[in-house]
Amino acid sequence: MKYIDFQNIMSADRINRYFQSTGNNSRKAMTLYRANLKLSQELFTIISCFEVALRNAIDRHYTALHGNNWLRDSASPGGMFNTRNCGKTPYIIATAMRKLTVYSHPGLIAQMEFGFWRYTFARHQFYAGGQGLLTVFPSKPVSTLTHSYNNQYFFDELERINGMRNRLAHHEPVCFRNGFAIKDTSYSRRIYNLLIRLFQWMDINEAALLYGLDHVVDICDKIDSI
Image (cartoon, rainbow, N blue to C red; front, top):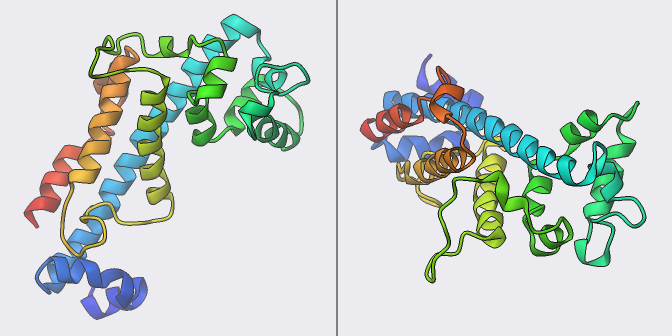
């Protein structure tokens, strides 16, 4: 495809950063745009796998403690999340319940977005749930005086993943230095490394899980070389 046609389809405003970052080389700009799409696809796939693994681990933990319908029950009167301190959590669960034609616990679990699972590590939700949720990361490092691997640590790390997830969902590029027309894959590499680390702390063989799906490092290397 000619660059002018590519630009007309994608819009000059969107493609201009790719053009500038490749020294005003139209061929390289199109190559970079496509490489960014490939990187976005792979990162979203890995994040999706991580999200499912995380929510299933949390579900197993709370099912063992609070029963097979723990999520529904947690938002009911007297439920563990039905407190003023837990903010909108009961409302979010109730809203998801209303979307179900027929209630089932797996169906309700599937309705909850990544942000909900992140907030199970927030201070009030974490304490309301019994303070045992860190067991979903059985191989996490032991906390020290300088590094605390507590619920706040995981709350913050999951926010970083959620931020990347939102960028991908809104088709924002992930191959530039933030705010500049400069190629930079460091942000994507950091999030990727975080995902791999959390998989490992969950005792998940991420290489086997992501076999054939994970080429993030190779794509980042390609982007750096364009």
